[in-house]
Image 1 (cartoon, helix red, strand yellow):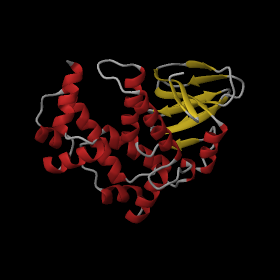
Image 2: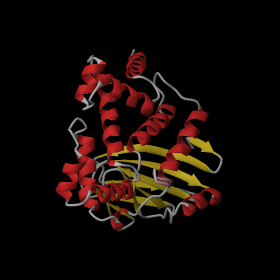
Image 3: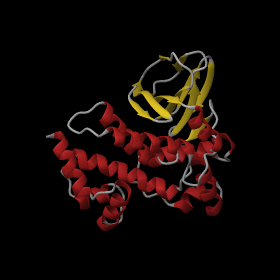
Image 4: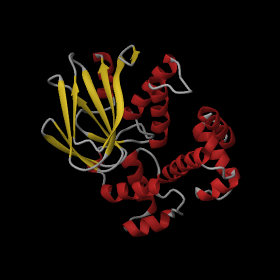
Length: 270
């Protein structure tokens, strides 16, 4: 057991790449597997096939003590093996989250930060968080699965234009520096701006503008970690209009300035 946090326990977690078949074993009841997709994938769970888009997740119960995942295409996914008490399971029910249903992940950037905290506790290198920090990260991570920014998690299949919207979201995270004009997007989709904002929020629990900013912050973190470019240059490379706006958004999302973030990353490497 990696993290014990009262009503929920983390048994195992990890990231799999290019795996065709993965077996998970449990010797007790109330065990669940959360699968988080990083790209489009077809996954067969105990003989039933599901289609998952990027930034989606699914909670799968261990009905027989064993779970078998079969992947049809080369893919990358993350997983959490959890033990949940009946009390904690009630929370999923209260938030209308069902098992074996594919849901959208509202805040990919926040998910990445919380995932990093868990990994740094479980696989410590030069930085090691306390158990209390890991427990807090686990609870926040599970809260992301229960609630989007609008307080709900939408069933993606019920959202009009969902496949076009997920394609757009994938492009945003793959090309963060691109100039994303909402009116142009709406014209391409053939819908009005108010309707587009409504659909995007319904599908992903966040706005398109928030996703654009989150994708640029994620790209900026990578550049701060891997290059010696100045903050001004990085702001331009990530598509921000000014370095002041970039620094304001970075601190708002990450909690520290870009310069401080770079210094901490340098200390960890050294």
